[in-house]
Amino acid sequence: MDDYHYLARNEYDGEHANNPYQVIYTPGSQFGDFEFVEGAMHSEYAIGLSAAAIVGSERWREHLRRADCEWLVSYLRRIADGEEIPTDELLTARDRHRARRMGDRGTEPNE
Image (cartoon, rainbow, N blue to C red; front, side, top):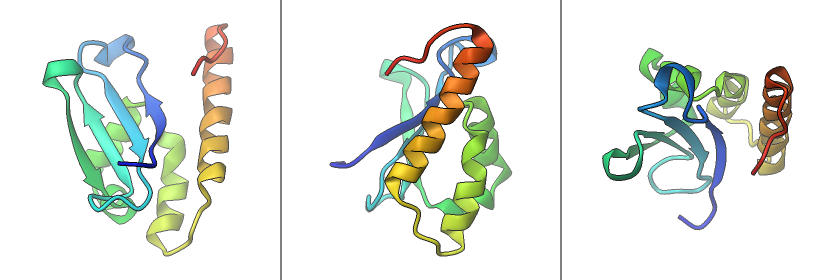
């Protein structure tokens, strides 16, 4: 996987602290443009998915919720409909969401 970008994770706190959830953007991957990861270290597993597979499944939308990545749904629908969305647009949306969330917590986002 040459080109990947972390879009969200549940920051290892709250309800799913012992079983973290992540969403990674992997454009052009043979396994799917998005990687959903659950668990940590030796118990971590991942699956590559297309945008259409994610929006068509309640299971994967629940993963988005747990990873604090519900902001991605509108982009996934656009991608599933055939629209090409530049990586920069997704990353800017991610950064805006994280800044809002960190502001709600009274902390600064870190990379």
